[in-house]
Length: 387
Image (tube, rainbow, N blue to C red; front, side):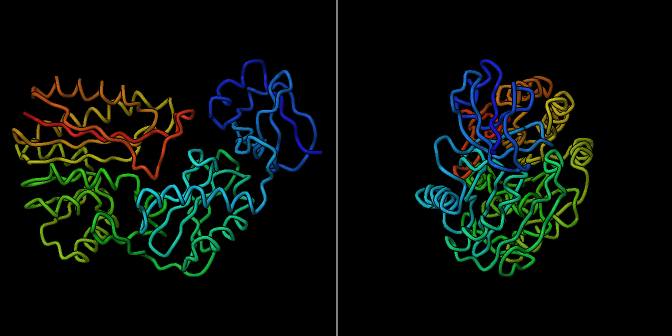
């Protein structure tokens, strides 16, 4: 007999509003018995059907709802859901590299699928999805006819699901680096060892937007494989790409060579220290770009993260020439837009500079945010003019 989950009184409101997560502490009782990772039906306290999703007793998120009617979770369901998600991206003009499936935002919780040219990379971040990855790969193979599908389920969040990190080939073959084209620039995505699934696709429109402000000498901090640096190099005189990872900087140099850019230098070091050293040297740049990793991955880390964001932004503001630009980002959803802007306002006051906000953007449209699930809205991109 399949599981039936009954919520406590009034706990259904958030879920009816579009959120998919049912927390264990929101449940009044569980009826039936099935294996962990099976499909469970969720009901309100008074017995109204809400939806179905995979259950995991090892996780604080007991059920992730993705079926709101009487459908089943067979191959037809997954095929149609993935096709619908991809059709949305195709309709926006994406073709070479983009996020095909963005988990909750595409009503496929805990599933990520990214396209890098002829190759696909997937992440399975919950027990239920992990148990069905063979079925999902079958659907992907029929829909995309890729040369290969690679799994990058090595995200730390899997531990909360009782799952070990996993990565490896699932279908076909995968090169160490997949060549893609972003904004007219060739890039090598390190799908096997790079961050996330190999490249940060969510910033592609923002990297194009940065070209408007990249002039003279540009400092790109936390550069990773060089997305912002290479876009800046199309218009700037010189770009210094800084990261603590030598592997990332090798990728920058390889990508620069691939495009014939001779105006990019790499600098290996801790960005916090690099910025302080430039300040002591009274070094200035026409444009500074800050695209750090998430400083806070839990609500408990917000206070420390706030100080970290303020530190680098305050120092960066002092490094920008008069009339130049600071492009600054945050990819943590716990650092809300209001909190991020408050931090920038404090940094601006303490910097002694007059600062104007000239552009605000979010994640790319292939990473849509579900209005009922705030976790899917996470990226902040601010362009500040430093007077």
